[in-house]
Length: 303
Image 1 (cartoon, rainbow, N blue to C red):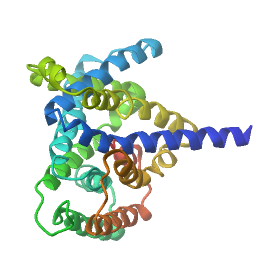
Image 2: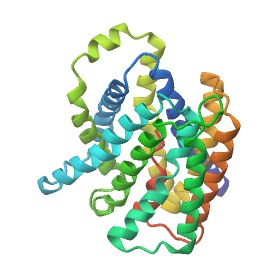
Image 3: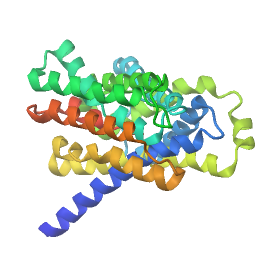
Image 4: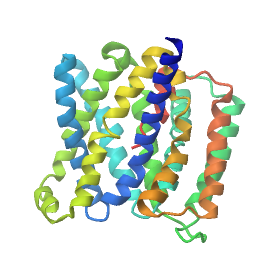
């Protein structure tokens, strides 16, 4: 029985990491035919439709009216802004490098938690942050050919990471009230609502896009946007949030591998060096800190 339990947990970890890692090359594949905002809109529409069925099966109750403004704001930041900024950033940043940049989200979240909730950050946190952003600078100043030149797409991906960190830091009260599963559904629906402003022309874009690009967006909506939340909720319910997110730092490794297989993207030296520095900093910043649910989940949305 114990062996079966560990196998299920390991399988859930594997599915979560692989699907989130695959989101980064999936976005690059979709960008060959879709604009960044259309990718976000279509991805969220597909995910939202799938979650309607999940919500009906689980009999998720609607949120209280007084909480709707905050849910809308967090959904806008955590999904609309995050995905759109990431999509724009990946126009000039490789899938693997983008996944490394997004891995700085826990540091942004820890700093926000310090500023707004006075959570301790400590010397390890500041040291790790400095190291991580040195790694980010390596990635930012190297282009796809491995030469030094400023890449503005890095700034957009860091904006995506910041918006995502705000989402995670300020969701704690609502996670306790509604639960991880229900609250995530609410915010995905909220993010989709804001993206509807880009709906004019989406039908024409779908008609004109090649099938493989459209299937990439559908894949993003059904798999990285939906399934990992179920697997992560399962791990969290069995082992706790800290254990559930402990292996997610492996996401960039698999993102590089999947991008290599799917897109034939071969990482250059500066991306690898910057990635190692960035992940080392993230690890150090969390080494002496027990992370609460609102912060420990900040590495969760690698889509």
